[in-house]
Length: 154
Image 1 (cartoon, rainbow, N blue to C red):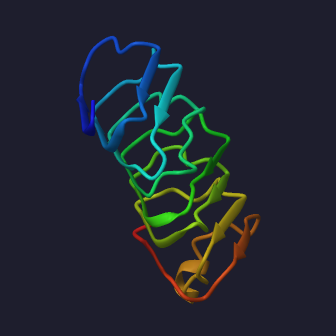
Image 2: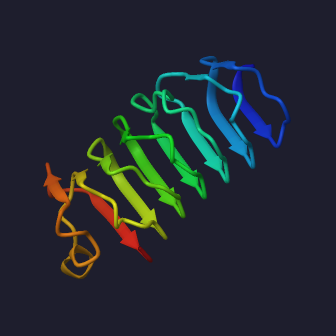
């Protein structure tokens, strides 16, 4: 498919999915249990909403804009996102202990449980009131002070 790919609640997806020709990928209410490999195009925009069993080898490192809404990341030890404009992690379950969001100009973390977070890398410093939500055992690395980070309803 070209330009845009939309996958919604399709049973029995194949084990290999190649979306490298899609500039925009939207996957909704999908169980990816049978998917072993999901390939994305460099600089694509991806939105995954209420997806389960995401394969831990999805390479998000070149994604321009990413939105993970209500997805379960239990298979991920690390979540390393690339460089782009915006990263949204909304109501994500089982957020991994290693989270690198430093490549994005704008970060939105809403309704996420950060209690298991051990490493967080961002471009911008956290506001004082949000620092209290980060566990004491978490190492926070800030690389810049010029961009927007919104961590609300954590």
